[in-house]
Length: 284
Ligand code: NAD
Image (cartoon, rainbow, N blue to C red; front, side, top):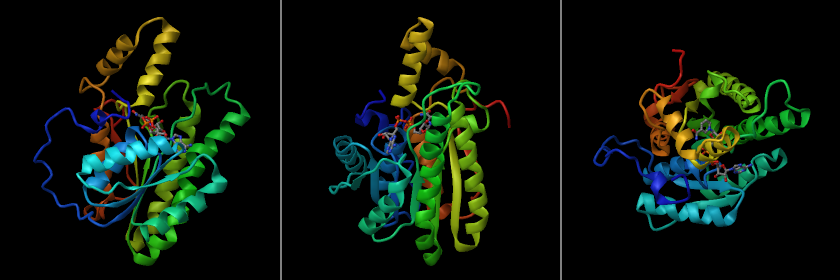
């Protein structure tokens, strides 16, 4: 579970035959950032299955090639999506990466901003270096990528910009202050942007995962088990019991929402922050 296997692309419940809504995504050109595993991989897989042309990126070519094969297999398409190596936490290279991706696609309709999360730290003890790194990793990766695709989207009067953030934006998580603070900044950037771009047929939304079963979640629970002298099974079980639906989410369940928001069908939804959390948040 949570590895680069096809397993994480499969919903646990039976959604076969539920694909009757034409999302009108065939031929749409999409970039999905940080898509060699986890949430990015699931989103890329679903967009590809819906007929998008696709560029995926991550830092490791072997993992990207493997992910591209999984995505093609999931979509039942013989040709794999384009892959580009990019370190999204390196702001100086982002505009170049965005232009390379748009050249490969011959344009851009959909941008999905995503990146790995920063390491844990407390609000009191976070260092200047950690704040600066977090700003580049979480805020600049999303804002600079977005700014790079806007001119083309404006010209064609169509675009979908999605950023994967975290439920911590609404309910801060202990010891994840860099992630939480920077994702709040991204959220207000996206909200501001949604108003600027609405007249051009471009939507900008954020999606907030609660606890979705990926490598990151398994690694965080392993670290907690070590700290507290428990086991991974115990920590995963505690996590599931704290969620009203009684289980972690599947990457596919977040991907389904992102895919809908990326489609022409979602043209009246913009400036929204939408949770995918199994009812976990306490606020309304
Ligand atoms: P993951 O660790 O399973 O996957 C992260 C992906 O990002 C991998 O493909 C990795 O190669 C890529 N990546 C990491 N850093 C990169 C960089 N600098 N440049 C390019 N690619 C990079 O994580 P995930 O669970 O899929 O989470 C994705 C994002 O969503 C993370 O920021 C995470 O903090 C956030 N999030 C996830 C959850 C969850 O439940 N899974 C909950 C809240 C927030």
